[in-house]
Length: 168
Image 1: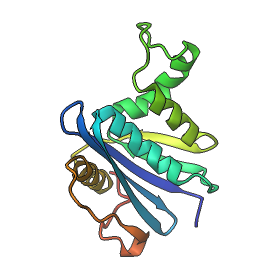
Image 2: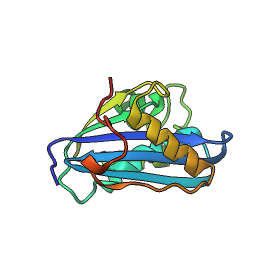
Image 3: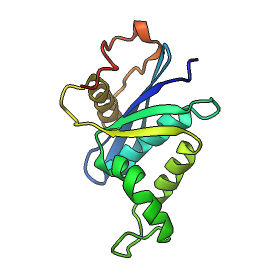
Image 4: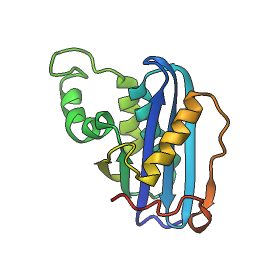
């Protein structure tokens, strides 16, 4: 496994907010691709967005994965990890309005999964033709709808989604 550069795409979906939800993630490391997904019967979109990031980083636990670029269409996840989380922790997990941070359990789990990794958190536009994001959305919505879906795990050159690394 090549640990020099790892690319991750994530997405989350909920049918109703709260309602049934799902998350999707694609982890590309070296010449390997792994699609991940999961479902919760009663959740929110933000929780599923967080779970996509958590699942992908936890998938890499036990490896020497360091240099990671994680693409998400969720401002909540990207701004949370790049701008808000340190302040929340300093303030005892309270927002600027002195209210408890929502989804603190998942934020703490995401921090733990990210620990020791160099991660660039990149916000991308959803539903704009970025194939990695589109596939994650497909995975997340299939899981939210409890529809069967085959997840790929294998060699990048055999992956049916071409240009997966193109995010322009």
